[in-house]
Image 1 (cartoon, one colour):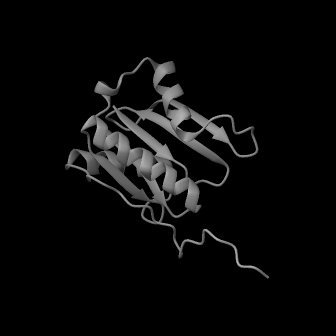
Image 2 (cartoon, rainbow, N blue to C red):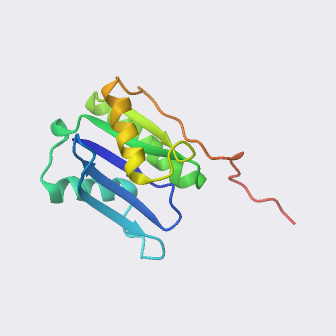
Length: 136
């Protein structure tokens, strides 16, 4: 089983548990505009608890690395890298410019993990990150 994290979409944050064949077993999301009582970490925790899956069953993490919003991508990549390190499992960073649909991202991510995956992934913003505002 694999953990899938996608924060690159404008309208939602998504976390899912994926089978070895690429089927989504369980998913949780936070929609844009909804009250933000949950963080991405809370979403993943809720998903794992609700599914009664334990970290030992997760064989790898697939995270969408961009392009997308700076803060969202950064938090997803940090979470994926941290869980990968803590659990001793590979992580696969997937770029939306390589594969446009979610099914393709998942299948390519699983293939990458089966080949050994990465030890660390980095976000891809699609442009120079701008975290400050210029004064007019």
